[in-house]
Amino acid sequence: MRTFYGILFLFFFSLPPLQLRAQNAEKAKALLNQVSSRVKSYENISIDFKYSMSNPGQNLNQESKGSVVLKGNLYVLDFMGTTRIFDGKKVYNIVPEDEEISISKFDDQNDDNLTPAKMLTFFNNGYKYTWDILQNIKGRKIQYIKLNPVNSKDKTKEVLIGVDVQTKHIYNFIQIEKDGTKTIITINSFKTNQPLSKNHFTFTESKYPNYYINRLD
Image 1 (cartoon, helix red, strand yellow):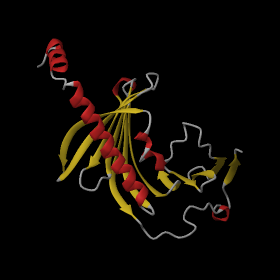
Image 2 (cartoon, rainbow, N blue to C red; image 1 turned 135 degrees about the vertical axis):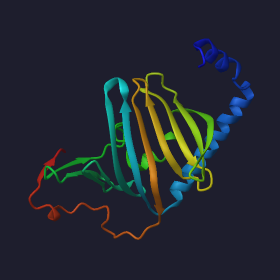
Image 3 (cartoon, helix red, strand yellow; image 1 turned 180 degrees about the vertical axis):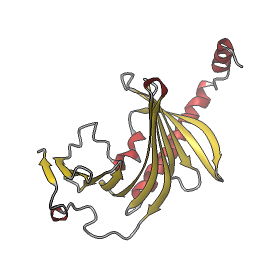
């Protein structure tokens, strides 16, 4: 078992030269740019994913599955028993268990409004990049990029993004908070340019005749 001092030795004396670290950062950024370009090139994207959140210190352990269909900034997200629709102007949260719908305007300036579309490109700003490990997962080469927030007040400690080297699609997303909370999103299915109806991202109130509708704006 490595001692604390042994780990310190490995850390300080295994660091690559400054020029190599800079090159690795540029290489990491270039790969993420390829991911962003690939995402933007599709007419639409359909994703099935697995979600988990854990924090042993807080006795937190959640797991769930979900799906999302994206077209530009428009999306339909099914997750944890709720359907969320964004039609470009308003956000509709539909909760069948409670037979309740909340409708609100979307504020793009609100950092809390991290949409599914932004989840695939959020890393373009506000982070330092590091070229991390390459893993072979079920025959797929997954290259990890480590992101550290530029803002020291950010509650996030680090983010790891696993990129499929061949497709340039995101395989998984691991976010570690400073309080020890770890969130992992793994993409199980990534389909593109699927046939969608013209009303796919439209909320139709008549489909929910017995629901209570809470108009927040």
